[in-house]
Length: 92
Image (tube, rainbow, N blue to C red; front, top):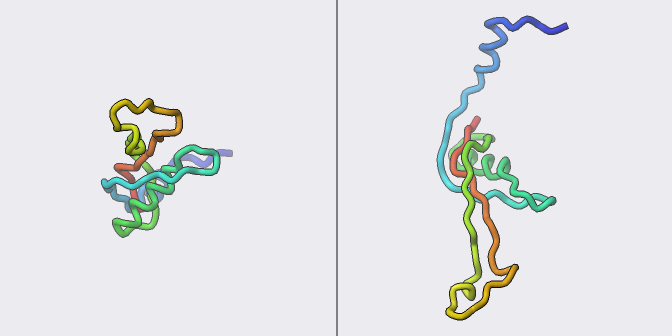
């Protein structure tokens, strides 16, 4: 049986103080190759004095080796990679 939603239950969920922070921290690559932006959000929040965080905004940028910019160089499949960053997080 479900517990009825009461004002006390709602207030307990809001009891955790949280703050929104901004910055730019890289998301490490997880074992499956996807960016782990939860870890990036935690790092961003820890840098601001909090314990952990949840990613709100992310950014991505293509990072290439210098040889890509040489005149006449033909870009190969492994010359560039996409890096992901957390730019805003909700911290607790």
